Every structure is written in C-alpha cells, then in structure tokens.
Length: 338
Ligand SMILES: NC(=O)c1ccc[n+]([C@@H]2O[C@H](COP(=O)([O-])OP(=O)(O)OC[C@H]3O[C@@H](n4cnc5c(N)ncnc54)[C@H](O)[C@@H]3O)[C@@H](O)[C@H]2O)c1
Image 1 (spheres, helix red, strand yellow):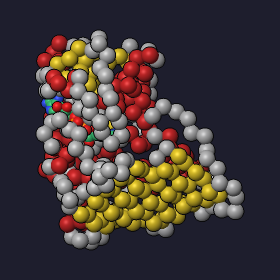
Image 2 (cartoon, rainbow, N blue to C red):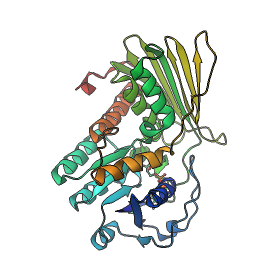
Image 3 (tube, helix red, strand yellow):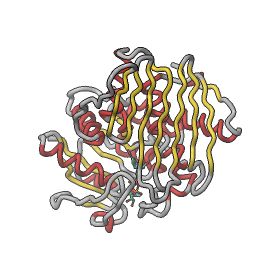
Image 4 (cartoon, rainbow, N blue to C red):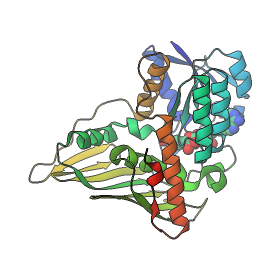
C-alpha cells in the first residue's frame, strides 16, 4: 500500500481526506501524515463551497513543518492542498526529495512557475499530476465521449457556468481575496471551465474576456472562446453570496443538446425523447487520486492531466486576463498550439 501525506490541511483537504480513506479500504494507498502550519486546522471544521467536515483519522501523524515531515516519513506520494502561491516552491521541494506529487489546481500562480515545476519533475524522474478534477468527473467524461464518438454529430455550441459565493473559508489569512495570491475567480474557479473547454474542444484560435472587480478583482468573468464552426462561452462568478454553489454546461450537437446541472445530466435528442444517462462512479476527487496512486504504483500513467496541459490552462487564463485588461479585445491563442 502506498504511503501518502497531505500538505495544507485547510478547506479542500477536507474533500481529499475521505477519498484517501476509500483508497485505503481498497488497499491502494494510506494517508499516514498531514502537515499544516496551523495545528488548530487538524481539528477545525472548515466549510467550503463544495464540502464540509474533515475528521482526521486518529492514526494519521501530524506536522507543522513539511520539511520535517519529509525527513521523518517514508512517503511514496504527497498531495499538495496548499494555497496557490505556495504550489510551485513546495512541489519542487517534494520532487527534489524523491517523492511523487499530486498538486491541487490551479497548477501555480503563473505560467513561468509551471515551467519550473515541470523541469523539477523531469529532473527528479518523479510523477507530477495536477488536480484538474473536472477531467475525472463522470458528467464531463460522458460528454467528452459523445464528442469523440460523434453519436449526435459534431458540437456546434457550448456554454459553461461555475457560480458560488466568495471563498471566505480560509484560515490562512484572506489569501483568496488577494488577487496577487489567488488570481481572483478567473484563475481560481473559472480555470475549471477554461481547462474543460480545451479538454473537450482543443485549443481555441482566440479568446475575449470581460471581468468585474468586487472582492479580489476578476470576481465575475465572462469568457468567449473562438473556434471555427463552434460557439463557446463560459461564466465564472464568485459574487453570489447566499446562493450556494452551482456548476453546469449546455452543449448543443447537430442532433441533440446535452445539459448538465450539477450532477444531473439530461440528453435532449432532436425529434426524440429526453433521457438521463446512467452515470455511475466515484466522485472526481476519488477518481483523480486513484489515477495518481495507480501511476505511482506502476499501473498506468497520468494521461488525463499531464502537467504540460495543466500549464497551458494557466497560460490561457493569462490570455483571458490580457483580453479583460483591454476591455474584451480579441487575443490570439496561436502560442498554445503545439
Ligand atoms: N479542486 C477543487 O475543486 C478545489 C476547490 C477548492 C480549492 N482548490 C484549490 O486547493 C488549494 C487550497 O485551497 P483551500 O481552499 O484548501 O485553502 P485553505 O486556505 O483553506 O487551506 C490551505 C491550508 O494550507 C495551510 N498552509 C499555509 N502555508 C503552509 C505551509 N507552509 N505549510 C503547511 N501548511 C500551510 C493553511 O494553514 C491552510 O490550512 C488552492 O490552490 C485552491 O485553488 C481546489
């Protein structure tokens, strides 16, 4: 069984911990240690926009210094759940210690940092996977398969939404509300859909984006992705105080429209009966942590989210920001093409 540790036991770690528990029950991996600079976090309740509760199993060893943890524990994999501005340095430290890394999205605060992380992974010979969880969500995997199979013809239009209240749960000062650290909703939350647009449709030819500043900056984001023969838009908005979290998509194919509202997917074939496909499977955290665990154990690769691709999603967010700074001007994405 793989030995795993989490660094950063705040909001999102509370969603990873139950998945590690499941993987232990399945004999794949065991969470043996957790590190957070604030020891109160090991017992604190943190409610995020997607999860709450985070009881730590009694046999998990706790640390407040990750370097001490890396020195004391024999680890196969570290799951980095730190605030975004710390992803780059800690990922590189862990890789340089000869340990594989799973790092939460967004991969880093900027594209230059992603390149340093990729270079460190290459030099260490260890695996680096980025937690772009949506790529593992059954609702999104379903529509990707429809695009690939051509069952309903080609996609002609798509829109994506990701809406929530502002992320105010962090106990590590108010880093989400500081644009320098979080990149606002554009980099932090909208990136899920930016990445999914690339994952489903490939690199856009160009983008246009407008944003509004209410908290950190770039808190309401409307993006347009320009393709030949395909209309794609996405909205990210974390200004909806009191409404709870919502995400979904609407993808129109030549012969059907597929609508996802949270975890409910409905297919509306033209001239046919609407139906809800049966989509079973673990939640996306468990699915992504299974993929990295299997890869570390030598069974498979991290083909769904290679770090080079995760890095391009950061770069695409930068191009969207460039457009937003120019009042929605069209910005070429030629540089993203291989
Ligand atoms: N995949 C998703 O759907 C999803 C959802 C929410 C957040 N995230 C991402 O996860 C990351 C973490 O977000 P969060 O909401 O858990 O943040 P958070 O602030 O709630 O938690 C981060 C934790 O890291 C700890 N920390 C800070 N510096 C440390 C250090 N040097 N050593 C050890 N611990 C340290 C803090 O004390 C805090 O408890 C962010 O990059 C965020 O964008 C992903």
